[in-house]
Length: 305
Image (cartoon, rainbow, N blue to C red; front, side):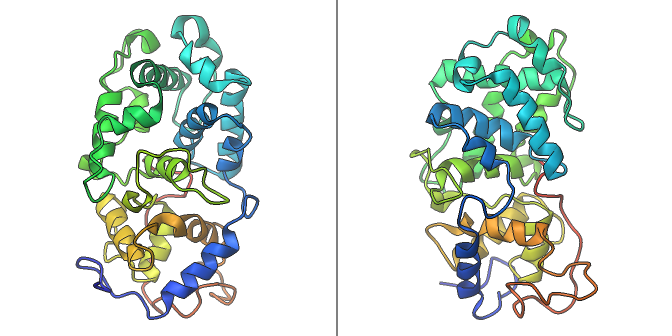
């Protein structure tokens, strides 16, 4: 197997064991504050599937703000979010959601999002099945499946949610496509939660192989991906996400995205030393980064498409 990503740089020798140690140090439910903890509040898989999509969809901005917005949405959905969504009618049930704002996402966009999820459940029975209906398990990764998923989601009639549908409705932000160049961070984050199974991720879905997942690309994964020579790209997007994932497959071809949670939170805690006067003295990956050329790029874990 090649030790070089397609057109990328060679990761430092010995990085694999260091990543494995990092993964195990973060592989417990309370290792870091994260939106997935709100998903784990629910015990029913159908509730977790719905709450997971909403939580990952709102995962942009400061963590405290993200958690607050998710809590406001959950307060509207009540104790049985899946039942709320199955029975959702925008005219009858949309008003409480329409008053919620999260950064540039407005209440009508949340009404439209829940409406789209309701249509998915009515058409396919679950979000998993709706995704699987447009996915080809023989493709190397989930890119084509995400393309189909977003395209079919946005094909639903949005008039019941918006009334007069805007030229570019805000709900589109929840359904980016790889063909547009987007890293599809929040959709890849959702797939990680649903497909992988350990003490962090839920592993609810069986229709998608974890080997086909793509890393959720945020500012922290971008930064560490560049510093660890996992990618040659300097601008975040689908190609960078693919290349970082290819590099991680060198260390675990069956489950390459398992490193994502730890890498992200090393960056969020500033353990990597970026912008710190004392440098990377606390970094658990010290010695594996390139010494120069650390660059800015991407958005926070809780930001981006």
